[in-house]
Amino acid sequence: MKTKTILFACYGGGHVQSLIPVIHELITDESINLIVVGFTTALASFERSGIDAMGYSVLEKYIEQPYPEIVNQFIGEVGHPDVKAKDTYAYFHIGIHDLVCDVGCVSAIKMLKQQGRAAFMPIKTFTRYLQDIKPDLVVTSTSPRSELALQRAARKLNIPGLAVSDLFLQHEAAYLCDGTYAENITVISKYVADHLRKSLCGRISLHVTGNPAFDAMFAKCEKVTGGRIRKKYAVKPTDKLITWIGTPSDVSLTGKKFVKNRVIIKYLEDFCIKNTGYLFSFRPHPNRPIELPHTVEKGFLLGSQYSIESVLWASDIVVLETSTVGLQAALINKVVITIAAEDYPPYKQLGLSTDVSDVDGLGRAFLNMKQPNLDYFEANNGKATQSVLKVINQIGMNK
Image (cartoon, rainbow, N blue to C red; front, side, top):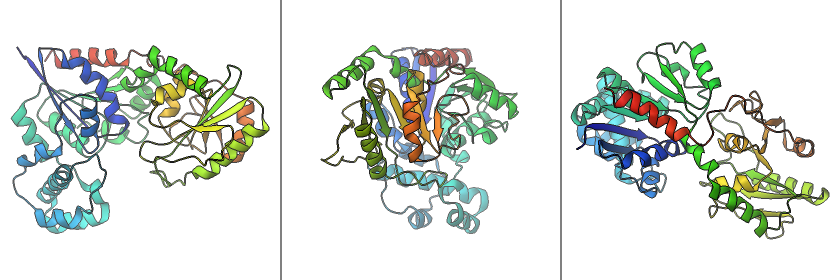
């Protein structure tokens, strides 16, 4: 007999990967009724992992007044192939509906022209949704807009909320700590918990659990596959394999221009030719596949046929600009080098990486490898999923 209902909802990317292991563990619990909603690309990620989930369109029936003319004005062209057209439409329809309810049509249109999707905060619609399904616990990641609105709606209805964070929360503290958010947050390290406490998160229960998405790094099969990769590409035990982690675009979310793939490939190739015992591999971002030039020497492509975990186990040095992969690599004691990271994420600040100002500084860092300092990350030991489940049991099952 189902005695408790738990709602999981989140966006895609790394966020959904943090919730998938937790949901998998709860699926077999016959006392729990699971409801899973995937925003944007998260729905496809849930489905690919064998989780029965719904998209944004399931929420559209909870709006009170349709605004198709405004939606059609702002929805634009079809986006990511993993996002169904009906879910994209519902996303805009619900966001616009609540914005119009809050400020009126004229101001809503003005805000949309100025802010785009950042203007969305559909608390009203999510409140009606929660009143209908009556969950005992709402679990999200720490993303803004839809997830933020859902947690605020839950708080408004006195429904316990839990946010599972996957990063350093450098820019999220303002809304996490404003008193309208979930009363429970899991964090990846004591450093993040201390950071939030300094941001006056005194009324929130902070749980240092690590990131469930990183548990896979410690699976024996990933380490074994990493060894097979080295053997396949003739990487000797004494060789140093440098892996470049590709970027998802030409420019970061903060406006930083990323190094062009051809530039970094040429640099790595020249370095490995000049320095005996070094080889390099290129791991493209999943949203931006590429092919290496056929003439590349001492280098090879490690594409989607290999998990990122096995690629990291195969590597000795991991080079990137900004990515959670840097933390994953550090957790298994791989040397991490960032390029002009500007402490976003704060890898250098925490002793997780060596940061160089530009591509030309990589050579010296390769020759003077510095191991990561993991003093702040004791919770990321392959048991984060179980730690998050304990938190869920504490706050959701004891209601």
